[in-house]
Length: 185
View 1 (cartoon, helix red, strand yellow):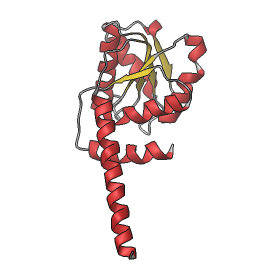
View 2: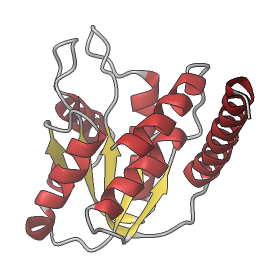
View 3: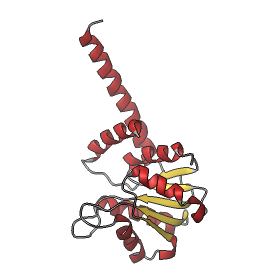
View 4: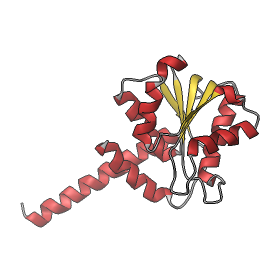
């Protein structure tokens, strides 16, 4: 077999692997099984320089708000880090929810969720104090599969997910990034 043929076969296998993984991740991310959970973990995203939430983050919070108002969860954990814009995402997320009538006593803030793995570890670290046995992940559809995998990797399996119906052109890049991240974390 020539090197050129081997490279073509390898590329074809990689593309098929990417296509299969991405198809699964999109379907997994868009399915809402309607499950109830003790807590919903809303992953952070960009806060704009003027302190307003990015549309993507606002949609995640609206999704979490609907879970709470619909009685599908008792508590909301908002997790994000300090963005380059100078705002703690968790605090801004909590402010959004409080302004929409969620009691601050049911909102837990994690301002050290600088990335997905940090959010997972921080959420599990406070598990005993929050006394939860099940959780809902709230993030964009392309991010859900990896987030659930990280929880499972850390021995937490009572997990389901919900994602807002919000799509952007940059989702194509995000799908590629999530593919790589899924296999490297």
